[in-house]
Length: 632
Image 1 (cartoon, helix red, strand yellow):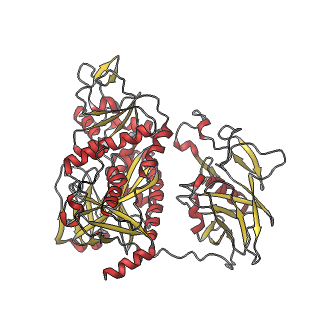
Image 2: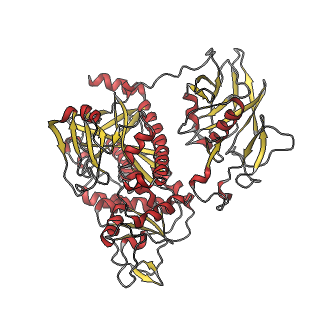
Image 3: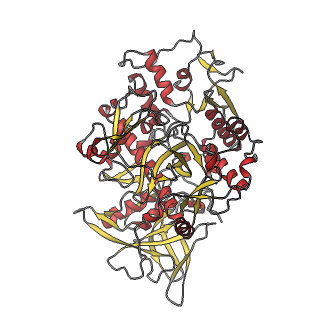
């Protein structure tokens, strides 16, 4: 069964009032008034200056209800289901921590009015999970209030959103039966000192984090063709690189494994970090002094603000680069603009496993294509969508792969390689077939367009970009036109710029997924070792790695095109070295949510543009321990 919104109310309409006189609102985002909600900031919900969440999501109601009725709140969480792992709430009157206890569905301690009911990430709540506030508890049913499920008004006199059937076992276990398809209830969370029948929320076992390398055994598979060349992206890839993932013949039958525990932490980190990077982006765009650190021409700043304030102008693709080992999981950076390796993660590592007969675990890219299709469907694009790319082979097969996802979403797509065939027509840019360019997805980095602006405008105080329709259209004449919607928007310049990393550390100091990052080299970083990075760069270029206490003998530097850019300094947290290779785990986001993963490897300390992608499999913790034992 699936809930229906046949009588959905307009966004922000009060559907009913929860106990404690707390209004519950419609979250039908398709009906949101653009005048009332012109930008992302307008969706932030505050009570007494305390941030509740985003209007009108399930977490926002839960935090607002607790604040108004209990005078405490739970901390920021990436997804609703993460509430089940929280251990405390904060009382606002004195900032003290009060214990939270989590009880699985079927526990012998019943939920109680005012506690939180938590759904797992599945079915209707596949990515986020869900949370509601319990209002009534009976032997045969339970009632609760919630947002962002049904958007119809409650019946007169009703004081709850929904009710579900319940049952009690002979042992006293309380079971709640969810009627939605493929949806499961994790349990309930109660603020109490009594931990009787509560789940023990143990710390994540980081002994399960380190990637493991394994071999399938080469029985001649490496000599055969295995990439699906009926797919244009596969044909382009194979014609250029052959039927291989790893370029080193020694590694062609080898793959890496991550445990389910490590993979769950990777997903949680990806989702949480995306939201933290978005908060940091908003913070930077409110502070001109900080924004100047990003070395962006003044002519672009109004356009970046407009891009960010356009609530529909969200990103499609992004990639986080992680180091995962027994010492934890740390993010190096967010490639929020022109992220690569989607084709390798979504297609090639699965095709490799099928060809080599690797049946252990599953591919972490198995749902990546599906997520892309869903994201493109959600855009509801009526015009032709132009993919703009350079002539680089990697960009070509990446563009062709993305084109297939767009077409699977029902979009009309054209690929433009370079800008040489573009023309002006009535003040707008058209493609070689005179089709106006109104919707764009690009493999080009925004920094390419920014460099054009820097070249054209020597005075950094100029507030706009000169337009010359007498000359052939440039890349900036397409990407920066106000009538053109670019689906990896201009504001992604901010989270992609490494100047965001010191801002992240300032805003979220000592966050477990972050590394100490600074605009100036500190004594603390000198003492523990650091990585010096240009704030804008690609493919691992112009990076310096310095070991603890400036041990120059172990200093590593890469060459490149970005040596003249401002620098930032990030704490050294090396990649794990496995079989003479440094191993980086890449996590892909689609529309801000986790969508898949792969690994990249290199003999050197820095992952570069030419570094190999190798197959990755996600295996059970038991299989991981078995492989660990076999390898020792």
